[in-house]
Length: 84
Image (cartoon, rainbow, N blue to C red; front, side, top):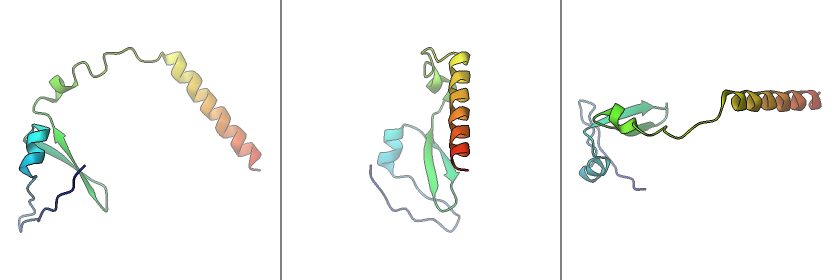
């Protein structure tokens, strides 16, 4: 991880360093305002193609998700009762 200082122009623009742009391989970025700081993320030229195959593996079943949620609710209830 590297850090680079950038100056904001009078028009509110900054330049992403060339090395970063080339590593990302994109001309577009997403700026996420987190209050005290911002996150700059690359946006692929074709987001749909970039996601192809990303979720190809089989996920858990709905029943697995429900069981996990029930267990989490039960644990939260036990902590609530124990804290009385």
